[in-house]
Each structure stands twice: as structure tokens, then as C-alpha cells.
Image (cartoon, rainbow, N blue to C red; front, side, top):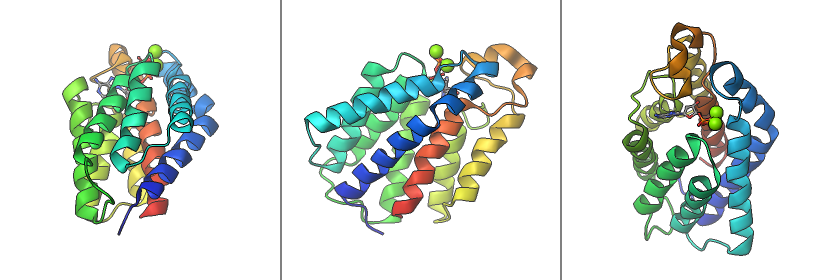
Length: 198
Ligand code: ADP
Ligand code: MG
Ligand code: MG
């Protein structure tokens, strides 16, 4: 397995397109258990990434993650902005000086550091019905070299039966049960489009 800077940029470009295509659906997921803006928040973030990318082509994998991180942190108003922003900032640091990501172990470590950033900022644990549920399932699957679409979608779907312990959905208590977490859904899109490059 080898991911070049072109692969990483193609992956994040695919992600941008998927977010735009699923914008309304992500906001709909955020309507019963949040404030209905998750798709719009994410679309604003990836739009800012595309703008920054067009202005200055990132030369390295690390710079590519940094461009996305800065866009998410500076342009997204919601909780998801700093959370994704911190994930991608940790991935920026972990890939510093890396010309390619040349093994599954290396990719695992990068995603693991991304997850650590989300948890440092948001203090959520797996099972709290947040994006952490998908990121942690992806890390586990990568550790076993068994990442596939089914595992990603199962992690997203599993948030449906949970009570939320963090974020706006946590104010709803039991009433959050029966609804998929929107941040878990946008994270599932991120890793689903990574599969095409593995
Ligand atoms: P906001 O709730 O500020 O409107 P968004 O709607 O864009 O922000 O994002 C909501 C998503 O952010 C949730 O679905 C959840 O996945 C994620 N989230 C919220 N708080 C946390 C947290 N403390 N840790 C991890 N993820 C969180
Ligand atoms: Mg919201
Ligand atoms: Mg909001």
C-alpha cells in the first residue's frame, strides 16, 4: 500500500464532493437531535478548503491536511469545525516530512492521531454517539487490516441506538435514541472515500 500526495488530494477532493452531495441529508440528520446545520457547516468547511487549495496547491501530504484543518477551524461555526480541524491538525503533524504513506501501519497511526485530536478537544469516548464512534471503529479495523465499507457503515448505524453523552444531542437524553449521529455520518463519508485509494 502506498498513498502519494496526489492520492491524498484526490481522496479529500472526493470527500468534498460527497459532502456537497449529502449536505441536505447531513443537516436532516442534525434536525431531530441537534440544530439542523451539520451539512451546511461541513459544506462551508470543504468549500473553504477548495478555495485555499486553488489559491495555493499544497506541496506535501502534511500541507494538504493543514489546508483542510485551517479551513475547518476558521470557517465552520459549529462544534464539528474545531473537532475535524484538530483531527486534521494532528494528521498534519504526524505526516510531517513524509513523502508518501507507505504502509497500513503508517496510515493507522495517522488516523489514530486524528482520533486523539478529536478526543483531546471534545472528551468523547466510543459509545457516546459522536463522530468518535466512527473514527475509533476505523482505527480498530485498520489495526486488523480489515477496513471495509461494511465496517464503516456499521459504526455509523450503531450510533442510532445510543443515548448521546456529548454535543447538542446529549440534551435530549433518551429521545436521541433512534437517530443516527450526523458527525458519525460525515465521518463515515470521509473513510468510505478513502477505501478507493487503499
Ligand atoms: P453543532 O452541534 O455546534 O451545531 P455540528 O452540527 O456541525 O455542530 O456537529 C455536530 C456533530 O459534532 C455531532 O453529530 C457529533 O458527531 C459531533 N460532536 C459534538 N460534540 C462532540 C464532542 N464533544 N466530541 C466528539 N464529537 C462531537
Ligand atoms: Mg448542528
Ligand atoms: Mg450549530
